[in-house]
Length: 99
Image 1 (cartoon, rainbow, N blue to C red):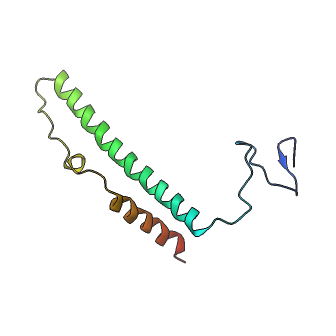
Image 2: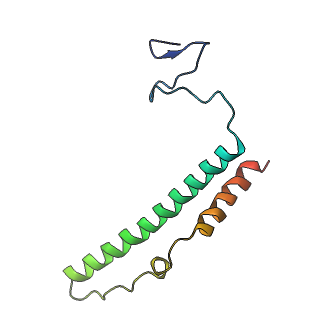
């Protein structure tokens, strides 16, 4: 129960999201699914940063005639694979399990 945004002993509530704070332990499947999701998000964010940087260089080359046209980033010519996501998730898992 929540009273005035404060969690009471009967249930912990996140005051920002109003969601129940995880009190039950996650299964191994749920933990792996979370790690895979986080790994995929990181890889997508990294690709987006590379894409944005390339886009900015192209815009600069279009605006200024003395700037050379940038080469297409080699990282973007290789598609992200499931194995890439798994490898990053394993790195996350190894970090979490290290003592």
